[in-house]
Image 1: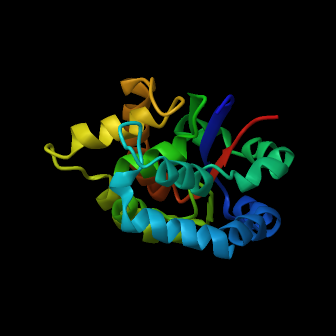
Image 2: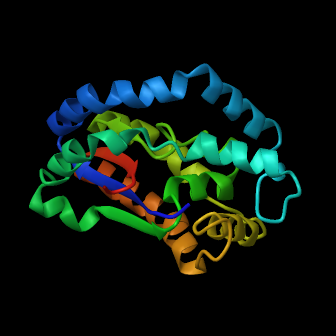
Length: 204
């Protein structure tokens, strides 16, 4: 994976959510509903432990890479940047931009959390377009998905980090930014009455 992956979570007014969703939403849904993608999703859900740098099941690891690394919004980068430019000044401090060397942040989070927890997060592998009401409605599930018992946290952090750079070599602080940054952002967006964009892409 010779690239830099970016995942931006941006608080925006509802009208920005609606405009971007009209353009990019169908692209994400087409990816989500592709029969081959659904098959890959079921494979991962059935055996998430088969994926990873220490696994001997190379086919499962490659399949998860195909499932989680498609980045359907790569073709809408100009529209994404235009939407990010419309984040109100008072909400800009809430923006969360996660940049990983040779890795995709949302894919790493999926690998770290596992399918049961990751499925509680809205959208499809980091891509979502939620208005303010949907942000508030999703908040309890988002916080619950990221509420890791102390005994579970080290393994989740290790799995997250290993997927951030060529299936190994990801930094622990990158994993911590993923696991610790999303919940507070979501809470702050809900409190501010903001919509949220989640966009994972590889800059051109």
